[in-house]
Amino acid sequence: MNTKDRELRNKAAAAIEEKEERVNQDHYRLSYHHMPPVGLLNDPNGLVQWDGVFHLFYQWMPFHTGHGEKFWGHYTSKDFVNWKQQPLALAPSDSFDKDGCYSGSAVVHEDKLYLFYTGNVVNEQGKRESYQCMAVSEDGIHFDKKGPVIHLPEGYTANFRDPKVWKKEGIWYMVIGAQNKESQGKAVLFRSEDLTNWVLVGNITGSYQHKLGDFGYMWECPDFFELDGQEVLMVSPQGLQAAGMEYNNRYQSGYFTGTLDYERGDFKHADFKELDHGFEFYAPQTTIDEKGRRILFGWMGVPDQYEEAHPTIDHHWIHCLTIPRELQWDGSQVVQKPLEELKEMRESVLLHSDITIENDQKGVRGVGGNAVEIQLEFEHIEEQFALELFHYAAFSYQKIEGILTLSRPHLEDKSKTEFRRVKLNGELNQLWLFIDHSTLEIFVNGGEEVFTSRIFPQKGNDAVLFTSLGASTFSIEQWKLNGYTYS
Ligand code: FRU
Figure 1 (cartoon, rainbow, N blue to C red):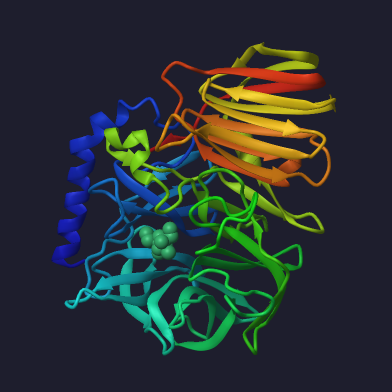
Figure 2 (figure 1 turned 180 degrees about the vertical axis):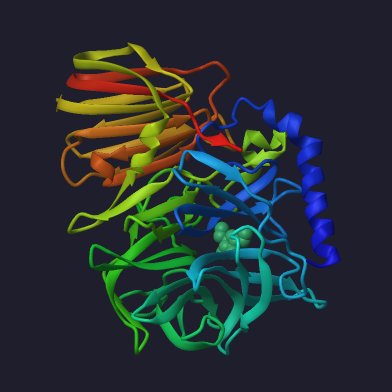
């Protein structure tokens, strides 16, 4: 650890101490989502399970609520509910990462934990440089930086980052999010036999490749994995134009399914599908756990999307991660399910079956709260069904068109309402909501569609109202949730 490293760590610790009280006074603080102790959190990084311990790192700016020279924060857990706050994993203290230890991933090799991340540098001419760096740990807590293992290849701009590493048939592979000199977003594949020497294979896909025309000027945070035998490239492209119900956020996150030719570095794939339809979801990352499950965490935020309008900034913090989700392949698409382990948080249960509401709006006894999980099973919806949450957000289903809509006051201009929509394949039969003070995650029909959003209702407002046009019959199960513990 160099002197600069020590200084930065002390400064980060001082920032926490100085602002802790104000941060913790915020009624928008969360009980079961990872938040920054102070400052800004963005992408989940380095997800990996090692000897039963799950490691979750995250992009962290401790000194203010904007972006900048990122650190890697670090949490670990054996059960996804009880977490340990670990010392900072990486600080931007070296010449090759001085303007940010940007996003990346982790793998276990020969009983050591390897981190791969992007060293972001702004040089003396004010120009960006980027280095793909490696750091190694024997105890999973202290990391020894080994410096760059990949320098920027010809043909790309310095927007070249977010290495995701995996192993296939004895060979290591890495996919990087990139922009080429023609300002086209690309996913770039490298190969290595020893994690240190990397060979460029090529652009597996990107703007103007395969069936894609212009598909964004930059691709961030790629991830590549197999899900029940199906190959999936998950990526966050920047520069897609909104098209009807699609691509309504500032930047998108979604996936392509297809077949990767590892030799030629060519990924033949189907169309892009967005992973989420809420207002805040970006830069998700996955890992496979020791049970063989594909686990995802996402960032509940979107870069450059009115981040300054988040009210938590008054309390010196901003953004959080999603709950962990398990990905499954249902034969035609990726579905997301809340991770089984979260059931451990359930405290008390409330069950109402056979509720019918007809041309009316009403509350249901005991339903609502700040940290709850609510499951609605529908027996019948005649025309339209809606939930009003905390006099703030609304979620509705129009049966004839099959359209789901989430709305909330526009974060920047509260006189306006903003909307996100998706058309369902079949009928609505289940809604599964996770609510945590200022977050909302809605899983539709077993996770076929998901809406992930921040919500900022007035303090003390935790009522849920149900509205039906025509008659709707459903059952409700609700659990109050204990929340994560931190030690
Ligand atoms: C995505 C991203 C990554 C980058 C990181 C920096 O949100 O822009 O591409 O590595 O955030 O914090």
